[in-house]
Image (tube, rainbow, N blue to C red):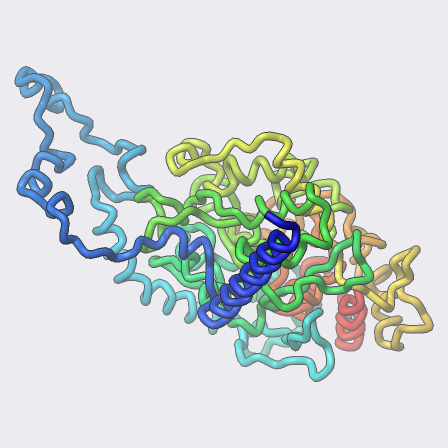
Length: 509
């Protein structure tokens, strides 16, 4: 074959490949194509071959779990007739009310109760918060979503934020007027990861049949969030307005990341079994699922407010709601996870795969499909996570992380003084990354008749405007709510102007 013919064939293949990619991309944009969902969805085929027809044997009772032929008739005289009459955990669905309960019956019951579950949560939220969204006319997140402003928490009749700030912890607890008690999971008994509707609309495999997301979209981060890389800062947001998934990660990043980082990203967008999303009867999705990806929860290496339950507390009713946190700035953090205090990204990645995906229960993890990742792919995943940077903060001095006086407004400058002074914020949130790599216990039980959450790690405030809602369980819907929370808990006695200035400063971090 001549070189000219080879060149012609090669050109044709390149052209054909380009057309195919464009067609796939066009179809994807039209129907929000999800390769994972598509790959695990069975196709309907005609049953016209003899071997496809159901027989009497296929439909017989001999396959019914509680009607097997015993090995020996002598079992009738043995205890329990030789059977397991209690729960058999490899077989019985998680949270089954009785042994041998059919997963179809559980699903039917929980689908039927879903409306009542969500109505009760809606009523709770409306009692606690003013959900009529107000947005700032100028302040926006990295890709332009307006910032919701507060405070949104409702106070009792006759109570003001000023009066509340002057009250003692004992007075607040006795009168039951603390505006920020723990925010519960809508379905505590089942718990598990819950995704917001805007994400489920794009990836239907993430929908659960037993519970829905509860907070209004206006109080959530952007979807999709921006992505900033510390190895290519000149590129700014590299997401290009797309949700990174198995469909597009290679196209978006093959010319930006190293091969090791790109392989780590591949793993971060590859699904692994999870408690509520897996092929077993324990799942809370209608159809069997390959699982979820790391970047389903940490969308674009950030978050869109997904929540689940803390995996490291028992019994079930003591586990607290836990919002998915951002992976931005992982390279500058010395401890990971809110309470587990893991000391490397690699350890965190392994721990998530082995137990946290499964509510801290390695027994159920094995049942559903726990993946023991080798340290090499784990290191690749860590390399990718360590590339995720904070959003640009043009008003901060690059060396100190403090405000550049020449760029700050008067309000922002006043807010910085409060942050490092009266507000006591810098006790835990120190520049330039605005965290102290420690864990702290605020002892919220002083203010409310609930058990406290214990020590929780300090989370970074860099890029904080992109990460609502706030606190580990999302109980503070806005930055203004967060300031009011700490004004009460730390007994700061900030006035209205000081609170506004403090918010103005934090928006620049």
